[in-house]
Image (cartoon, rainbow, N blue to C red; front, top):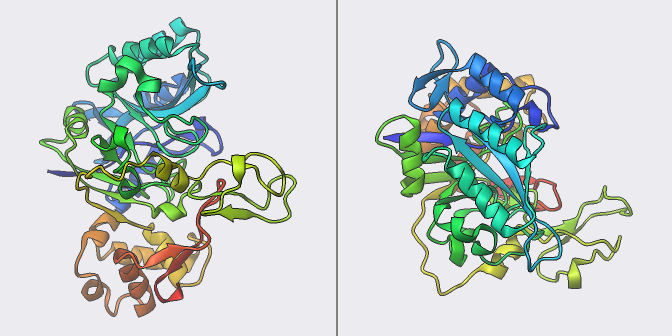
Length: 409
């Protein structure tokens, strides 16, 4: 059975956004075609109680609002920070953790108290003074319940396990004896399976893609997602599919859209009158020639550093996508995805297709939309489906790439 999942999100407790209502998330899930969605921030105590109050278990390990079919899975992102003996600075890496029930979350609360960790923000830090201590923390979390899953998040971004800030070349440097329990990685918005498939330590792991969204907006939820092959719709089957690499496909950002794809410094940084992007001729030591500060190495360059071209990659099905609401806005030459014209066209299309995922998987887009939607919009949708789009400039230094579709390239 096919199941569309998006298992990495954040609530307002993670900072940067206001509170996000689960009812709004559920509404967007239906429009996008997402079957199961990660709650975000589930181990932050106020969020834990909020989720327990609002959600009811409808399948083993999956939860829903009353009288609603959208299913939620208990999920958080945490930041592990440790001091590795061979590194001058602390190594910091973001991880997704999936939980089967609230009892496991309360046990996680107790672990954090035992470790003396502050649990005062939606995306907490779990710190340690050595790799051995980190390893013990990971085992203690995993031992709470056999179905807890720990997944390295957006592995190539600066704060990912293989990101430029960490400069790790092997996973065992970080995980030690816990490494066999790492079954999957999250590709992240600035990388896709093609960029990762020849990196030795992750070449044989499961790749999942998630939105990592901080909003219920149509261009955030499901902007990346994973289609799993599951025996039934419950938590155990989802974890089993991840551990056994039963991924039918992933939907990905074009990596060039991601905020850390290339090396550079954006124009609004202190000491800058203009931005700089580097593709091949990266300055020595990553020192910016304008402000003389160190830049973050782009995901593209970092992945090339780690690749082994002798590896024969596993065949993985994936496609590059742009959220439909953004495609519609671009077709109308409008910047706002909330303009009445854009929303009206989106609603028309959603009255024709059961969901956005259904649209992207359809071979009858032209026939279904003909005479109901203007041909320019249809052409833009078809161009995206065929991969006829790019980003100029590409994303860099925390700035998304600028979209160009079809004949406008």
